Amino acid sequence: MKYFAVFFFILVSQLIFAQGKEEASIIKGVIKDDNSGVLLSGINVINVNTVKGVITDNKGEFSMMAFANDTLHISLLGYKSIKVKVTNDWIKNKTTTIQMTEKAYALEEVVVRPYILTGYLEIDAKLIPTRENYRYSISGLHEGYEAGEYSPNAFGRVLGSIFNPADMLYNFFGKKPKELRRLKEMKKDDTVKNLLASKFDRETISALLGVTKSEIAEILERCNYSEAFVKSANDLQIMDAISACYEEYKILKR
Image (cartoon, rainbow, N blue to C red):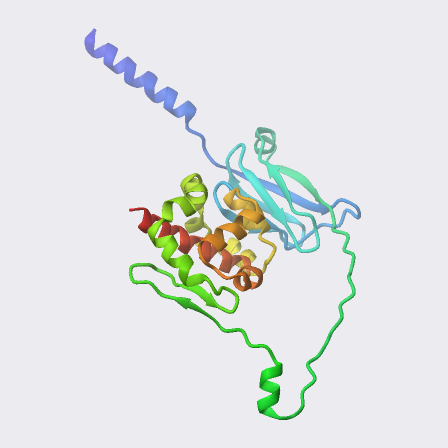
């Protein structure tokens, strides 16, 4: 009787575990323009939860592995990015149709003012502005810190970050370790990497890390990256910068 009770307990536990264990399913979708109905190819579809991405084919179709309640971030240049939740009905029906709205752009007037050069090298060299940005390298850390014209107080901030790292970065890194661990996963997926390398709007990073665009700028500022870098870097470079700063934060915290 004793052995039967133990066997029964193990059997019930396995059944409960099997019921609670969720399996990923293959979901499919078709993406169209909501106005014209045209099938949209080259759409980037990223699963925010698994940090895996795919691109729609010439028929506007895609397929990927997903769990119920996963969030898909869908984007294409010229269209409004959207987030779509994976539902049980979608998994059951295998496929769904998604519509995207084209952005309306208002072009602003651009005034081009060329430099008026004299032809004398010594004079012209002073007329054309130069950007002298460089980075301090600190022993024990993976990355340096930017300085120069666009970050004149960098060295002082570096010392501050060493002597008081927790107060400066805890609000970002200490409260979002799960989201920030996704940074490593992003580098493993070529679709995600290629998308980030082509974007400068911080939108995809914001969706993947669960932070706002303004918080991304503040993170980089507190990590001593210059304003010039923050404005000019593509999203892949921004991701690498945040990743490097996160690793330094963990070292300094110890």
